[in-house]
Image: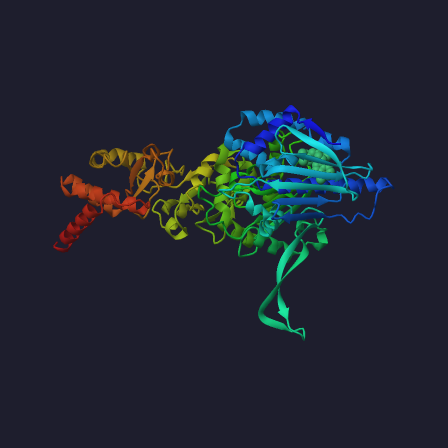
Length: 639
Ligand code: ADP
């Protein structure tokens, strides 16, 4: 006799969400039903260990059947099944602790967020109603003589009736919705789609997921030889899933080549990864993480569209493709996955807690990656340099990001080229090699070593034998500004502010010279007042006539790096033109000034524009620069 029962209020609300919400995660229904089947088999297996009345042979499997004529997909398992009461309690109510919170969250969430909520954690059995107009669940528990069927359209009520079924387990029959116009649900009846969904979401379910598939095999002639170009369509039962995930195989079976080829296939890379890490963590949180550092930065890594993240699995069941919480921004280049038994696939446990758990896992993965890199830096410098050339920028970004929150974790992973050495050095190595009288860690922003070495500002520092770090990434100065100092040594740019050197000018002290030449310097300042905040005599130049430096604060490199931002004017370095008082050019300026020669104006402008060029800025006005230069050349030649 059939019983007609009404859904409990909460069930009704959840069902309504399923039936009515339009969203993109409809595919997950299959994952949810297969997971239930797998859980039911687990439970049977587990019970059979202690209960002798249960069949220990198992022969466990999950079978998918499709019926295009009747528009049904059936998922069969030979798990624990459900008794009459279990059927009502399990499918007629959602008596689980997290569900209420879930529904509350859904109420508050915006439409897009709702999609995320359902998509990530699934909603178990009811998700079938995203694609079904009706679902029948036929089930037989080994603890009951009778078998029952639940059937419902998921609206108000469901029917329970006794049926004939003797084999243990459950069959879920999904009647696909019919959209006459869009045919939205039809593709779920295709072999290809189902195979694909199993591969994507349920590849590592422990039990074989079988389906009848059709194949073309070459036709054979009477002698059993292949007839070329002719095929027979045959059907056979195929196991769609690979069952044991690579990361769960015993250590000795995890071959490097297999891991590499897994990486290449899964993350669409044409080459092996730079390195991989496999973590098996047991404790409060249990999980396995398989993480890869690629050899090369993903092409679009810096584009807005790039999504960082690791894949998330719950006991082998795929949940989410790019789980952001697992990866700090600066490690956005890593690929891989986390498989945990502690995150519920369904909503039955605290959904709310999930983020903190994920963050904890993410933190640990981060720590492990960094310690791997530290080891590499220590033991295989060459390989580390290879890594750093690809991802050094990311490490520097990590130092800077979030107001330096990770700077202490990262500062010892930084390496730099220097003016004096042929190798990269760490900050610690630089500081160790500093001569006693050197107070600061000097750096120069420059495209490469050659151009850094030839910066006029470098003269004096080179003469003193101090080494200088070369900064060639936009982010360098920002990262350093976040560090401020390393082992109590402050950083100092060689073209910013005072160099902190003891005055070394041979004849007179700079201050005295400045007083002596006040009028000339004032005149130059007036001539260049639109371009520079000051014209000074330089302590840092020995060979070059002039250079451009900035006051403390925004540096030239920062200015260049920020120039593409809106309102970038506020990030303008204040320019100071420094003149070498020991250079012949200074004498010429003095002469022109004393003779009241109008050429002084052109000289000032040319010197300023030269200084701009040396700093890697564009010329202020290339045409006037060239004209002035030509005039001077003509003048010089006619003397
Ligand atoms: P969850 O799986 O999160 O508990 P579901 O709504 O998917 O939530 O399922 C509710 C309950 O129904 C399950 O906990 C289980 O007891 C029962 N159930 C669902 N599918 C099966 C199945 N194939 N075999 C046995 N029991 C099942």
